[in-house]
Image 1: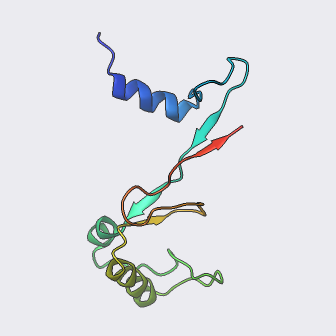
Image 2: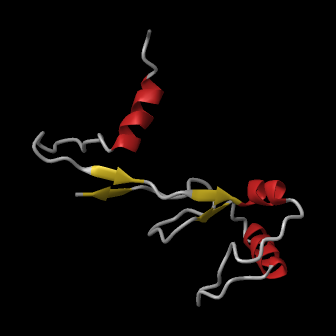
Amino acid sequence: MKSDPEYEMWRSAISGDLHDEGVSESKTVSHTVHMSVNIQGFLRNAGKKDLTGIFSDENGKELSDSEARLMLQNALAKGWRKLPCSDCEGFDHFEHGCPGHSIE
């Protein structure tokens, strides 16, 4: 069976087999990519389900259904397409999400 190069790249990324150029073979560099959620897709799939407790504000207070929906609509109004599922330095709300992070 012929191997799919794109599949192999993702398999390597998920298993942590990626190596930076110029790094000796004795040093493995892992690469982490944080998960994100597509806002429009989330709203479409959530439909009329209660969103209470799914999101929290910057102080950790869980948002009610109406507060969560307002927060998501405000994010869309800013032009955002994605929200991070956890803290992520350099997160791109508009297109790519997490830029990826090397872990040594």
